[in-house]
Length: 246
Image 1 (cartoon, rainbow, N blue to C red):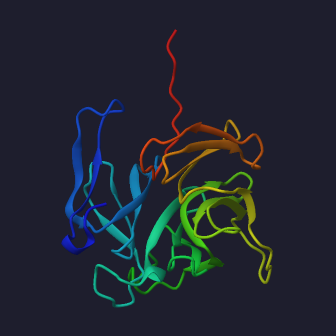
Image 2 (spheres, rainbow, N blue to C red):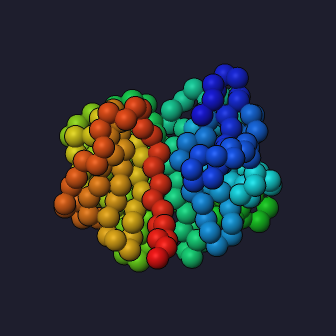
């Protein structure tokens, strides 16, 4: 994540055993990179840049860094306004859309979730796009995102105070116009919940909190389990299927 005042945020990769660490986005290539998403169809890496107030992407080797969205509205970077901080990101490749969260101030109920086309509209800039949709607002502090395109459901973690904060939530990816229905809370009592990843084939989700716990549950919130505890300050999490040899 780096120090925002020094503009030294980086993105690195390694083998799955932690060896062969390579910096693919060098210091200054992004301010404070948060959630990462690999989009396999295009071979692109997407991320939200918090104090950079941007949504960005690059090739998997770090080349061709692009800014897709700029929420700064002219503010200097690093941004001091949490309502403009981008934290979570999810990509719907088949639908051609990306989703992101803007956190808001602590416990202020300013959190929002947005959607826009993956590709920048013709003759528009990242700071001036007319295809941005506000899907949900007045949330505690939405952080990481994931999608279930088959059921058109959006899942996310929320920090902030109970009862709505420090939860895992879901809501339709396509909210009905004028529908004021509250998001469905699936898991509660997280201690600063952050990371989230879905296992769609297995019908499960995995999530983390800053006290160092990893949890799992079914996608409807049932069968809740604590998998590990007190493992340090855990933030992001990813789910990967690994082929097992004979």
